[in-house]
Length: 570
Ligand code: ATP
Image (cartoon, rainbow, N blue to C red; front, side):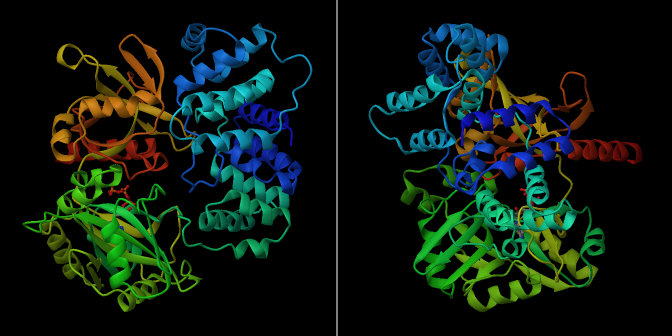
């Protein structure tokens, strides 16, 4: 397929903000994609492989600037100057190409296959001369591209397509392109996407017009899916109301989510960000092989850190470096041991358990897992309809230094990727949010050279935009002590994400998620969310949490309203 067709689609989609219209345009475009061009769908989402793949394009703005100047035949400084004016490297190359009259005469014959081929070589390159090789792969594409094609090539490279396409739009468009636009077909398609996490696979079956085949798209060992998430309840009573009596009450462990896949002798571990962390946790691989029966399964669990001497559980931030660190693994394993608490099971001996009731799934865990304290163990669970007993259990969970409890409906299915009402979390009222860093400022004096103050944003669930909500510089010193994240390290993590520099301030691509506490949320015209946080403080780097799951504007509004009520009544 000609890349031009895809670029034209991007343009049309970005010019039509209405969701209905976008779905219509996308459905038409999908109808025109030949089956042999199915991988165009990865590009459509700004990717080169399915979402779970670790091979991402990952090009920094700095490298993109070099590629643009080389392909146009101009100085880096001119590109940077225009970037400051336009704020988008895609627009910069489009403008420069027009200005230099490059490749606009006659139409380019760049194909999507060629684009994918070159893009897919980028993450494969390693060692000496990598930067030069990457540059030449990119420049080859940019020079043969027309101005509008170059615009989207650059935006894809830096991971910022700006066409406002949401996954929900895609499932609706697939439904209306190949079946009918009723809710039921869209739901079946969404379910298949959730189970496979591979849009191309679902598209391929849809194109063949077989809705029943789509229903058979199943989980596969080794391919991580998005985990099921919980809603909040304030009290045990409210929890029972939502999930019914009796229900399962479980400890809500303060660790990080770990998905355990096993097939034959292979054990693979994923975080909820779909990151493969098998290498970082060799002991967990051993525990699974030793203490869990069965040839093939997928377990859902929470890995919690504990003190190797006192055996007391530790808060999440103290073990988060085990996820990030790729070296000194043996040393870290000794110093920061984890216990895996298994609470769900979604696949067993070749069969998906997603549609089985929770009660059955949890009973099966009991059958195959030999509990080993401080290694791998079933999450503490009480099945009860008794409020008093549930409350005692909750108190005990807090005493045992865990965050609170989860209450789960016994008859419910496992719904990947959704925040569902049949799994609720209850924890003591705490003012905390998970936000993305979208900007920062260089410090002064001792801290010059380091970014020391950070702009945080929540997400507008409707538009998908990041909205600023405050600035924070407090809490990093403590973080440095507990999990080793210093100003220096944060600066290092942020530098490749810088999109724009203006004096001491930088605007960065949202990628890093942090947990913050605050004293109060106020209405404020200063930030474009309309809210500001009073006395915000960093509490953890949420390396386990994807951007798609950060606090939404709606949740901020809810917390603000709740706080108003609390102030009023005491
Ligand atoms: P929080 O910030 O409150 O941990 P979250 O946004 O990270 O919430 P939620 O889905 O809202 O995630 O809360 C559920 C999380 O709690 C799960 O993702 C999982 O990591 C963790 N968890 C701990 N114990 C359990 C358990 N027994 N069952 C399910 N999830 C558990």
